[in-house]
Structure formats: structure tokens, C-alpha cells
Length: 148
Image (cartoon, rainbow, N blue to C red; front, side, top):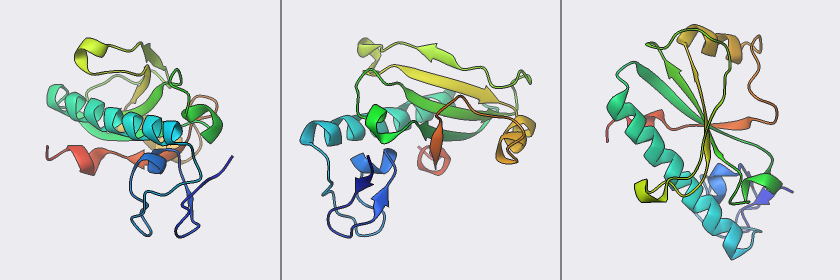
């Protein structure tokens, strides 16, 4: 299932589904209203998680939101996936940490966080170190959150 902006006909990532189209700024999609709402809420939650992590982790250098395929990302049980590049962490490879929803803290979806060193991130970019199966479509949340 491809996510298409119905205004400009461009294909979008699951993260872009809940935000204005980066090409034409439209919010019209080939998705149901429920799917758009889930995408919007997950995108907001990912930004908020990144912001909170920047506040408490001084070694954090980059936060990248990853996604699975479009047909799973619109399910509320599918976790928000973050790849965090932290120079204060120890090299341990790609080890996903799973967290459940925490509604009292404003976290309404489960999440999975992979924290890597800058060197491990370089290996991921060089495709020498693999992300968890199905993770794709990276959106950088660093610039959106670092000044908040």
C-alpha cells in the first residue's frame, strides 16, 4: 500500500502521512480519516519523545524516526520506532528496547528505541550494521527538536 498525496500525486512515507505534504503542503491523502489521525498522533508522539530525550541525554546527537511498511504503521499497536545516536552510550550493536504506552505521560503508543554510538551509526549508514527487520524510511527529528 503506497501513501499518496491526492493533491500532487507524490508518494509519501508513513511519517509524512500525518503532516502537510512536503511538496504541496496539502493534507489530502488516499487514507481513511482514522489512518490519518493515527499517523498524525504517532508523528507528534515521536517528536515529543525526541524532545524529551534531548532534554535528559546530553550526549544525544541525532534522533531518526524509522517505520515499517505502510500497512502496519497505521495500526495503533505498531510501535513508534526511534534510532538515537548518542556519543555517551557504549557500543553494543543494534539492541531494540521496547516500551509500552504510558498514557499518564502522554505516550499513547508503544515505542521501540535503538541507541547507537556515532561509529555504529556510520556502520548503519554504510550498511555494515543492520537495523531491525522492516525498519525503513528514516525521518530526522534532530532539527525539529534540538532548539525546543
